[in-house]
Length: 165
Image (tube, rainbow, N blue to C red; front, side, top):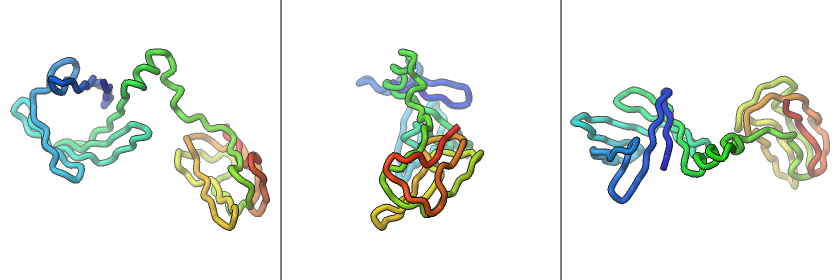
């Protein structure tokens, strides 16, 4: 069972041996893959050209273009639904904790400062360790409360580098 959310509308999709069910009713249509993230769907005598524009599997979010219109989809699988049912639906969201040095090294560069708002995947700093430059990136969205190191500092493993608000 999947729950798909788009534009304040929710669809429940389930694949059974009898076929594909949407909101409890069997999908009476035809889906053909055209390759390269393009699909053609026939449903209730209507034709739909569908393109998968973007897929973020870790966030379970997708962007589809259907007959020229763009739609953002959020998907919950059976595990997400179970966690939600148990009241633990928000536990899988990454909370930013203090960023600690993963290994001893030298701070080569710092890309953020106190008060900066960051997004998941943003570059935070470069740590040189064992003659290799390691780009340290954000694991989630947040705000920088303070930067505890300066360019040129030597740090040990687990040394606090950045504190998040």
